[in-house]
Structure formats: C-alpha cells, structure tokens
Image (cartoon, rainbow over all chains, first blue to last red; front, side, top):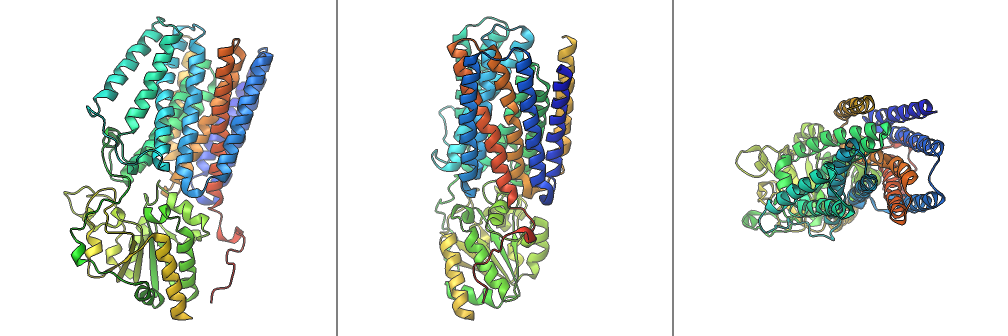
Length: 461
Length: 105
C-alpha cells in the first residue's frame, strides 16, 4: 500500500513539473495549470488513503479537519472568482500568507509532541520561515491594497531591530532544536518570526512589493519543503523545493527587469509607492494639449502605439483603452500596445489586465518588439506610465540608469495622459514630458481616454 | 542520518534543480500567472494538514488542525482558481465570445 501511495506522489510531482513546463507559452498555459491541479488532487487523495491506512484521525480530528477545509475551500474559491483583476496581486499575496500560516501550524504541532532531533531542526526552520512569510505577505497584501501605507515606513534604528529580532529568533530556535523548550518557548519563536515579517516588509516601498511577494512565495515553498522533512512526506518535499527554486528565479527576473538588486529591496526605503510627489522643476517647458487636438493627431495617424502604465491599472482604464484602440483600428490605423515587463503592479500584470479587456494577444508587443516598431509610429500614446519611458535611463548617474525602457521618444509624436507632473517611483523628473514633440493631456487615465474616444468620434463622424 | 532522511534530501535537491530549469524558459508576460501557479502548488501543505490530524488528540491539537486545514485549503483552491482566471484571458482571439456590442462606425 505504501508503494501505491509513493507512486501516486510521484505522479503528482510529474504533474506539477509538467504543468509548470506547459506554462512556457500562452496557448498551453491554462492546460498546464489544470495538469498541476490534477496532480494536487492526486496528492491529496493519496494522503487521505495513507492516513486512513494508518488508523486515521479520531472523530473530533476528522470533524475539525473537515470544517476547516470546507470553510477554507469556500473562502478560496469565492475570493478567487470574485476579486477584480486589478486586485489579483494582493490576492496572490493573501493566498501566500495563509500557505505560510498552515506550514507554521503543522511544524509547531509536531514540536509539541517532543520529536527527535531530525524533526526538530526542520520544524524550527519551518516555523521561522513560515511565520515571516505569513505576516510579511499580509503586510505586502495590505500595501498593494492600500490599507497599509505604500510609502516606506522607516523604523527607528533602520534595519537594526530586524537583525536583532532575527538573531533572537535563531537563538530561541537553537534552544528548541537542542530540546530545551516548553509550549511558551514555541509561542515566542512564532511571535519573533511574525515580528520579523512585519518589521521587514513595512520599510519597503509599494513599488517593490511585486518582488517582495515573489520572494515570500519562494520562502513559503521552502517552508512547505521543511514540513515535508518534518512529516517525512515526499510530495511536500518535492513540491516545496520546486516552488522554492522557481520562486527564487522569478524574483531575480523581476528584480532585473526593474533594475533593482534584491538586497537593496530587502533593506528598503526606495520609492513612495504613490507617485504623486509634486516635482515641477520642468513644468515651464511642458506643452499641454486638449482632447480635440490630440484626437486629430490620432485620427490621421497610420500607426499608433499605446503605452499603458501603472496609472492605467490604477484607474482600471483597460476597457477605455481598448475602446479607443478599436475605434482607431476600425479606421484602418495600425494599433499596438507597447508593454513594459514591469508595467502595472507585477511583471506581466498589464498583459492580464489588457487580456481581460479583450485586447487581442496579437496587438500586445513586448519590450523588444515595441522598440523595433516605435520609430515607425506616428503617435505614441502614453497612458499613466512614467519611469519605464524616461530617456534618462540611457544615461548613467541617476536612479533609473540602466533600466530597460520603451523608446517612446523615437515616435513622431508623443501624447502623455497623466494626472499631474508628479514623478514616478524613482522620484525623478521625466525629460520625455518636456520634449518638444510631447504633448501632455492632464487627466485621470480613464477620463482622458474617454475624452479622446469621444473627440475622435466627433471628428470622424 | 538514516537512509530515509538521505533519500528525502536527494529528492529535495533534485526538486530545487528541476525548479530552476522549468522556470528559466517562461516568457515575462506569464510571470504573474506563473507566480500564482507556484503559489497554488505550495498549497500542497494541505497534505501536511491532513497528516497532522492523525496525531491531534487534545483541544489545542484540534484547533491547530482546523485552522491549518482552513489556511491550506484556501491557499490551494484560491490559488488554482485565480490562476485559471488569469490564464483564461490568454485564449487565442478566435475562441472568444463576440466582443463588440455594436459594429464600429
């Protein structure tokens, strides 16, 4: 029987790996996720067989487990279905938090049974790492949702309190590993881990949250692998290791795309997360434009590139953008969307938002494709993007230096829809806005796009 | 260290290497769905919550089982549902329902 369960675990692991592999390309990605879900069903079913064969939980054990799992499933499916696409990043962070929380509880419960050293060591690490991801992910979700301030919250003493807490956590963890502990010591261990998560994420700006969520996701994977060592369960080990490694790679890719280093992000203090800092040093040279004049530029162009940014995501203007694009495409104008890898709130988030608004996948251009096409574009319409189109990135010596950007300034005309002259996350002026070929349409992304669409309709009947 | 634990360490290391290889090939546009997909996979901690129910034998243990079951089930079901919703949007254009309410003028 044990061999059957182990083979089922192997099948589940194969499904997880195959599923992730199928997520390499958009056409097979959804099928890949379903393969992974099927593997999950097999893993859970095999575990049920395993525990029943071992005598199973008591009646009260079954009851509490069933109630918890049922309530959790309802909460997970409901929030997964109902949450608007713009709020998905914080939802993923919330799911990551509860995964870490479950890992902590399983590890702590095993430690209450006075296990041997081969269980105590992974269980201690699991409680520490899982506790940090639980509280850290909740703070990250709060920052993304706006219930916790997005700006970096500086602590007295900078990073020192977190390092002191980490040292205390390792000290208490060492005592537990050496089998000198009571239930109160375990509580202190979990409390220290939770405090590290809160104080570790609070000083990090909202702009860096995607990288933080990804990093915490990798940490949860590692904690789950450690639970696998505690329970001597192979499917937990292999799935946790898979997530830990893939999450680590993903975190590195995200940080690279934003031109940030992971240590810099973790130490915190960069960016406001709000993008409304008034810096009007270049305001004198800015050319404002009305929707009617901008509509003329758009209606008589041959090629228009729409450049969506965080402002479009925040204003939920993806449908308004698609409406304008459809109107222009209906006039025979070639329309494309130039999507920066970190546009929106997470890498790839902009693609999700635009796809939700039924923008055809073929109209979306990645960075390299967009930069090949922008010099041929008559109009580049920048909607709520800032740092990702700042030409200063091509020069050394400023906060965005070296960051890959969209070459919007190479288009014949540039129209920027933006609420104000406020700077982006990097907190520096954008010389694109003062370029002679750039016209600024000061409006909220959705309102501005709506006015443009109305003006184009009036213009062309 | 006994044989069983050594075997588990081998599985762990191979799992890490596999994770590095599988992710290196995914395009940037799929990064958010991918993070969500890996997030759902660590919901396998549900198997840990089930195994934990076997050894629970006092009110504290039952309470921990209930909460761990709630957390893990929310992680795994929500993770897969929200990933599926994200990926549903990447369907090829031909598969979609008609998207224009009115013909463009």
